[in-house]
Amino acid sequence: MSKGLSKIPLERGLVPTKTLVHELGVTKEAIFYYRDKNIIPFIQVGKRYFYDLQKVKEALGQ
Image 1 (cartoon, one colour):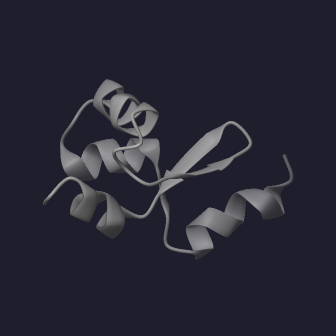
Image 2 (cartoon, helix red, strand yellow):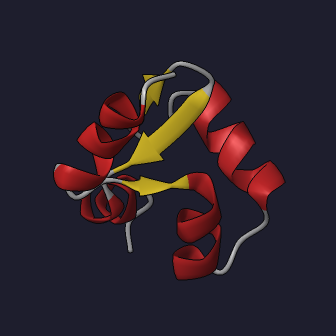
Image 3 (cartoon, rainbow, N blue to C red):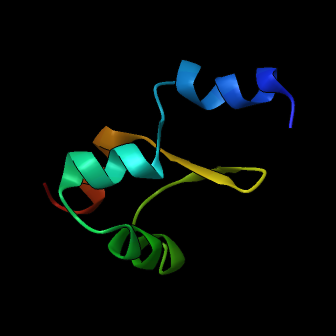
């Protein structure tokens, strides 16, 4: 993957799974479950997933 492509999500204010786990205080398995069940919005770039923290919190009712 080119380095320029990996910067796109961060420039749009999106966070990776690791940051989302920290911010929400849940396990990464919980994030995987929410993502697999389409409970939370996400963007996939190659094999990586990114999330808009505010939209995820809204989807989870936080």
